[in-house]
Length: 188
Image (cartoon, rainbow, N blue to C red):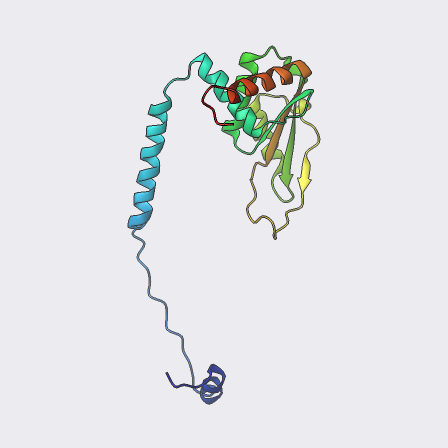
């Protein structure tokens, strides 16, 4: 308004006493209209999703597991390996693996990737509970030093990799993926 720099005004007014105003108290009326609309839309679309999917048939589960593995599973030969931070995804993968393949539970392995500073014991208990894999079958956890230039958020329970060493099982899964991606009408 005065047409002069801030530093000039600062010099001219440095002797003037200043008492900052107290900020007005905001009355918390809960989420605003947009937040309420977004929450309602999320709930409605989750319900729509549940209705659209309905109950999974055996074939549906077979296809869902193959598609999930296609996105999140290791493609190299000789070992079935699946990594994710979402416990529901890990549980779905293991349900699918256990249902469709004759696996030896004692050969399942798990390895936890967890940032330094997060509770390792709680994360291990969490994943043992989710997977049903005994703690003795968990490998030594990898403790990552967080790089704030790359990631600010950390998954409090880490990322779990579940592995099953079986070339035959892995090749069968690759066969399912190939069949899924070779369906008539599928682009590519």
